Image 1 (cartoon, rainbow, N blue to C red):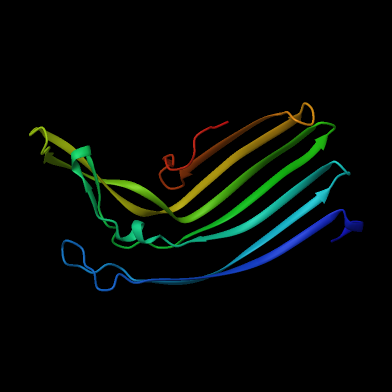
Image 2 (tube, rainbow, N blue to C red):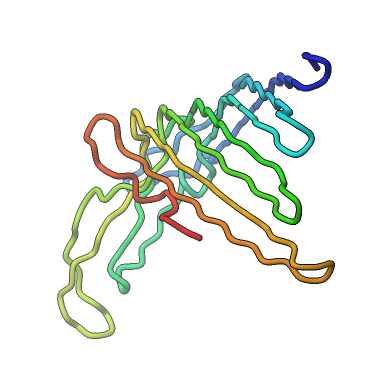
Length: 203
């Protein structure tokens, strides 16, 4: 704590160690699935400044580390009857990120509120990609149909930014009314394409 207790700074570090072994399982073409053996140290720094007894501002910087789960790396799911299939990924890497968040929260009489903006930069962002379109015969209808083939892949560089706001008003001791909204926007930095896996505008 600093500035007579008005400022609280919280540093942190986290160690992740992750191992995943397919135990000799192979893909349909006979090639082996990838083994994973990853370790990473992530750092975090948070700060909370008390503007007065009712309102505080906060800032946070955090590093993220996400190893692809077994279903992302090894999943082979053929659902052609519904027009899609998922093929195993050849070489997924861990996803790393740097996130900055700035916000304010507090209360004014019977109203509490919070608002924050955030910006994240990802390397190796894990996402689903359309890699092929096949033609198949639907076994139920006997008709020819297209099958979309998806695969989990890493996107080299992704930027995601957003805004969140919330408010809660206490009408009396038994009833309160609340509202919130969140907006997120994310793009592939190399192609400019939007990232479809992030949440849309909600409230």
